[in-house]
Image (cartoon, rainbow, N blue to C red; front, side, top):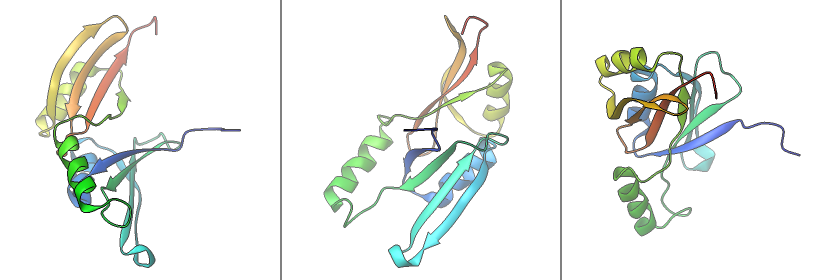
Length: 141
């Protein structure tokens, strides 16, 4: 039986750039950053929201052979860059304040804070095209 969600994976094309974006701009913390020479230098990089230890985001480089052939890897990179990849949702108690803070750090907003039936949310994207939402839920939800 499944007992909890521990990781969500997001494709990135440059793990060093991803590390800088997710930690310096979004304020997440590094959970794991391990290179495995026995797997061809595969790098396991995870970040998470400070204080929420039970869930991490894996920032995974899109692999080439033997996992994906070069054509598939290139297509995945193209789809990612277009923003067609699903992302994650972050919660906050103040979307507008978070919007100001992250904008000052250079985070690209795809949608300004907007009133919704469930609360207020805003859209952001990372340098690779991953779409994310920042949500401030109202009392009904």
